Image 1 (cartoon, rainbow, N blue to C red):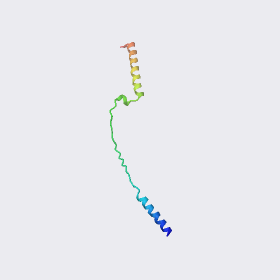
Image 2: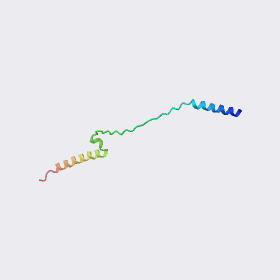
Image 3: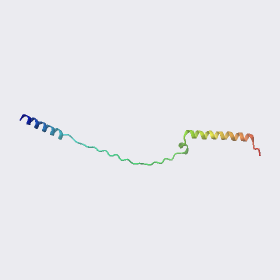
Image 4: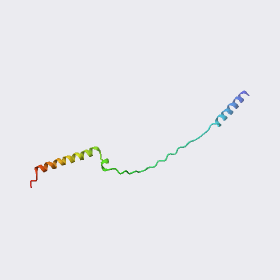
Length: 76
């Protein structure tokens, strides 16, 4: 009898404890969307520092060459 009462008390206690729990299930839905964005960038921004520096040096060298040609003059 004592074992039966103990078993009944454990069963009743576990039922009461389990039934009092709140079972809340959260679901998070993540949706991916691909978005294409075109940005107008000036030509200078697309070039790197090396390209811009190279153009500046070319311009300076061409000016010096033109000055030397003007000093020598036209042979014709």
